[in-house]
Image 1 (cartoon, rainbow, N blue to C red):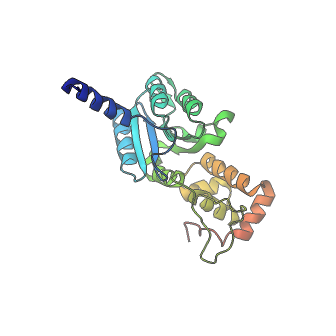
Image 2: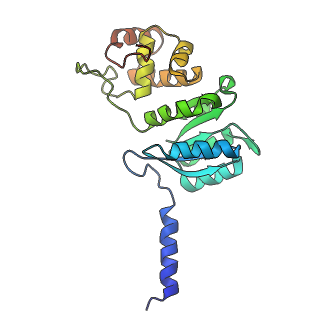
Image 3: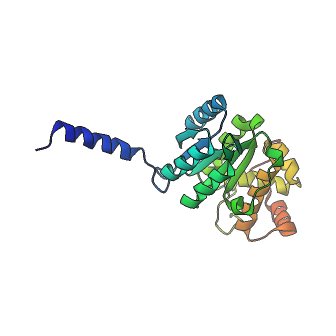
Length: 234
């Protein structure tokens, strides 16, 4: 016979289990996110804004390195939005924990000194963007859109994707188109209101998908610039 106490315990266990994060997204188009920021008001604004974005669920908002470690270990999020200078240490330590438990995770750094950030080699492939705090709310939505999944970015002409069937994300397509317009990484960053480092990250991913780099990447970008999205200024 099941007692009332056993029933309540079962319900509590079920509720607790429902808050734990699986290895991957909730469904094919959803992302889980942990936000680490030591300024309480900015943390609330940032977490609230991300939480309102369809397809993204904020599973934890914390203010320090220790709490960030615990959140990453518990939830293994798809995305870590991270300040670098935290009250109890270096935010990059939290990024290491994320990649230990979820190697496919992506990191978005939000910093008051974004232009001075130098990406360590171990973070290169997992860094989605480096965003200045002055541009956070404008830019982070675009980066989350990009993370929500690759899209076919060819024009209605039906021309094939030059990446041998590997689709570029929206942001990669924008960067690729602007490379074709002859813009430098710094100029592309200014055009898209993102850091030069973020442009270089997307540029490396495009080059990897195309299997090329350097002058050959620029040549292909020029040849394909009308296939992809027009530059935002047009």
